[in-house]
Length: 166
Image (tube, rainbow, N blue to C red; front, side, top):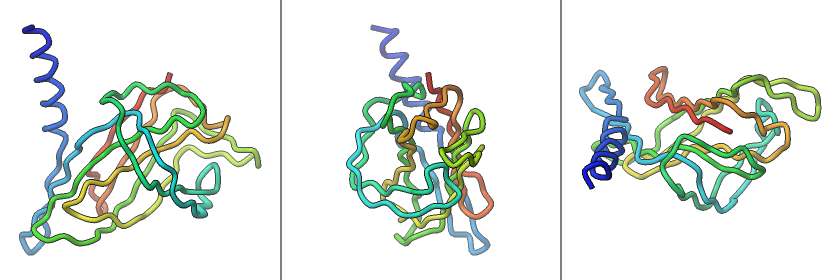
């Protein structure tokens, strides 16, 4: 029983310390908090072009739910994994966010193009949970090793999470 309580306490501590506070010149604060991470159950939404990605596309999900909190992900077709977070501010508004995924090694797509990272800009609402995830849609994306997601607000790195794909 003590061991189970300890594991719950450690898991809570890891999530509760996964935060970063930014303060602008006016004294306004933004607190970035990781709420959860791991493999996810998703409902596909829309797809748009993203030329600097291996697939040439970026998908927006209609639903995203973490199945269990872990950084170990099985590299199987259609596996989806990522981070759920919230950016807490006094008022609710959309903010520019940069998402970067770093692969364990270069990925070569069917066109022969190679990629070590994919990086894109988006807008996310404050005070409402958001998610950033990756889906293994193509055979060349089944790369085992450490995958890293970085989330930036401006030039500030507010989140960095490593997932081990096996």
